[in-house]
Length: 168
Image (cartoon, rainbow, N blue to C red):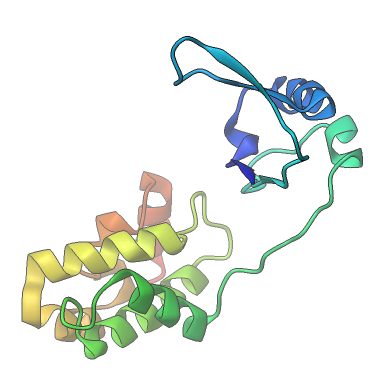
């Protein structure tokens, strides 16, 4: 299996260059000294991810199979949080409240410049537990969205922060 993550963040010509590599199925492994060429005995499964931050070239899109993964609902987010944190590290109360408030925050603005994603949720839960400890669940539940504790872990642009404050 070959994983190429977030191809939409690569230089503009990368997807088309990648097509040449995939057509030949010849890969260079730069981390192996001396630099070696590895021809695949079997064709690997190649998984390429994109966050759709920019449109990929049409020639590239014609040669791939597209599969969209929806953003997880609250139950899915709760499972993700549970998978990343041992039960004793994050109380069930904090996990549930953090997911609930995170979903509300994502829905608060119709056009985020940088909408909080799952990665931000996980960082936020980690920061909350370290900064507030046992008080984190109550602090998350009681705060308005624009004043959530450790909000900087979720909101990444000044514009989004200002717009969130205007909704209060």
